[in-house]
Length: 488
Image (tube, rainbow, N blue to C red; front, side):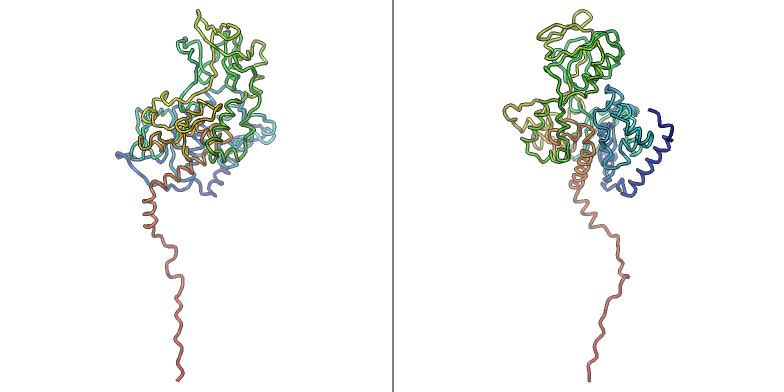
């Protein structure tokens, strides 16, 4: 989208940036750093290392810096391609309402709306229906720049190791070679699949890898031109994958949908209010489980526009009540068995979501076996059994991991799970755009409290040693009453 010719887009954006800088200055933000410097094996220790520089990683670092805490993001992607928006996401627009403030942290000048209006004006904003996906990525690139965040791109974390002295050691592959960093706290801002990976049916094992992909894979859909494509699933990513295949010129696309109807009501949207955002943490375990299980069972429907994007193609077919029982490689294609028919495809896309499996991430090996999950301590009520929820990490107030066996992995609670699997403990604040600022503030305030508490003796010593006078003793004259004379 090009700037409105009646506006100077660059001048408008510069004015917005100046206004934001003034707002931050008036609030004395970022705050002065107060965490005592520390070294480990002769090298400086970071206050907080944030793994990931997508929207949640950026918001986390911004919120931490506002509290005077050093935060550095490490992301494996090249600059400007963090997160899914410009790589694996395939929707035309975001499903979130354009008015949501996202990672703005309470600053009107930091919202997408302010960024948009500064370049294209209020009339264009009023005409905008949903936020285009790539434009959201452009906004996040601007957010990173204007907040002056320290992001180290093409830094792939290969190992995260909690240390007994309350530090966490990170091993990384970087453009300049292997690197080791040590931090007081580590934040895993690693997205939906950040604690495991793709959920795939067992029958995928053994299939030729050039005949299928997962909807979250980096994949050139132009390869599907002229092919018969099968898409498994009925969620947003299923519809986006199907539409991308059709728009790339696929001969046909069949959506294989286990349910007899596509979910129609977004229960998460219906629950959206301040109580839902702030109150979930304080709910009883039974109520946390109940609401999350209910939403899992109901499922979130795909956006209406995404479904229409598929159905406008005559060569798209929706197969409802059609679970996939098996897939076999036959000749150059794939043969799919369902309860009622057998279908042949040249290529398949599995839009089957993600699962939590710490063992799939080699970086987690030093501590994975010690993480306490909900299934370790909570027994689901009859009829509410849920493997996804049972595998969710059981977190503290600051999103910190907890030990399955106390004392077995010192330092584990210095790693913070700031991605979607935290939703059972913290609610829907760290999984999507509506709750980003709530989650970032909760995380940053929690980490600030932990950093202060764990080093309290030094802070008390600093209070005792503080000797900057505000009163010097020359501001007054002591009153000395005169002695009364004694009458003779």
